[in-house]
Amino acid sequence: MIRWLLDGPLKGFPDIPPVWLTVFLVAAWVLNEYLPLVTAFGLVFRAAGGLLIGFALAVIAWSAWWFWRKKTTIEPHHTPTALIVEGPYRYSRNPIYLGLLAIVTGYVLWLGSLSPVLLPYLFFHVLTRRFIEPEEEGLRKIFGAEAHRYLNATHRWL
Image 1 (cartoon, helix red, strand yellow):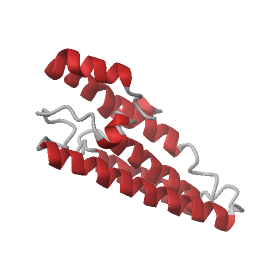
Image 2 (cartoon, helix red, strand yellow; image 1 turned 30 degrees about the vertical axis):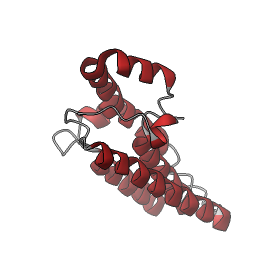
Image 3 (cartoon, helix red, strand yellow; image 1 turned 60 degrees about the vertical axis):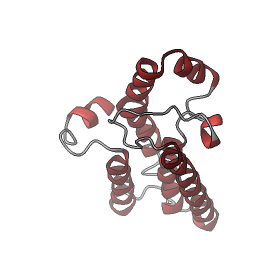
Image 4 (tube, helix red, strand yellow; image 1 turned 90 degrees about the vertical axis):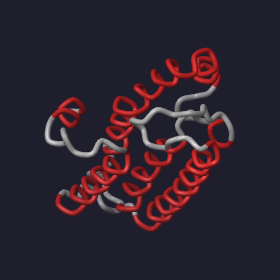
């Protein structure tokens, strides 16, 4: 399924995380709207989803601020000029991706139906294969032993 998604209908579109996020949010909405399996989750799930999305946006903003502070690129397919190991990067090597995953998960909770429940799992794999693994390899090439120490000492997600 993931291979089909990566090499099939989405091949050739701008390969950046916000576009993938949009694809998954639209897919969640479509599944919820046209195939609403088990919709009795209610207000608790909406509240949890909203809180998760709010927390995710805060983490993304905090993480993005560190790119600005270090004056390095935030775009995944560009070459970084600094290895960020401070702020949220002390806890996770990928706090922005973690935030994007939390947004998809929060939105699925907020929708309150079972039909899009597998989308966060699929999004996790897309982020890992399309962005995280190539970025980590690039960091090793650019920053050498410093990147190796950081990647070994800090969890990929949490």
